[in-house]
Image (cartoon, rainbow, N blue to C red):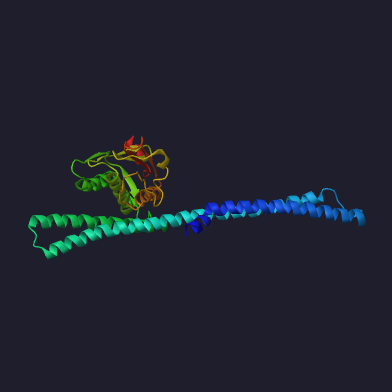
Length: 319
């Protein structure tokens, strides 16, 4: 079974096709030269005027060009095949991760409910159970919201509900609500320039902020330090989201926004589906903005830089 899988892999198939193609070219040249000599001898013997100089080489070049076109077509098919195989593998991995992510909070909620039903718990213990179940419910809600947002992205439905709002207030109020989710010792610092208006899809932008916040928590130490800065810059506003987490290697900086892609470090098993940063980038792109990420290396945290356009005339007030 393993040998069959290796032989059916796109790379092995391409190598095999290349070898077959080389064999076909060698055979074609050998056959053409042999036949050309025979036909030329017959023509010279019976009807010399039929022999034209250089015609056989034209035919040979035409045949080689045809083989090259066939090879190019095979190579294009191989590229699409490899892309499809990669996407299929990503989807399988994603389904496995998603199943695990959905089952974990459900199992936790079921366990706490069964315990509360079978035993008479003190009020303090029952409140702890309720807090845990509410946290698990919120986690499920976050996963489902990500799935629904990914569907909106696929159907190009982002930005349909965009309207002009006080973006400074929007960012401040949302992150202040998330402050309660910080673990003990965690710190959230906000540097928000007031009075910045922007045309945004509130649902999509809230989802982007939530994924950035969740990402900072997941990839940060026990006591995360998150710094969020919003300011004007000409015709745009700049939103920086900085954490003190594990950081990102240089080779992965360009891939973190890919669908289903996750940064994996040896010895670490961080939950997630690989949709969060993909959603963030899609939301920013739908608003006509840009996003990038910078990191000094592993263990040194990272900073997400988001640039969004401002409505006409607002940049003048900020100058």
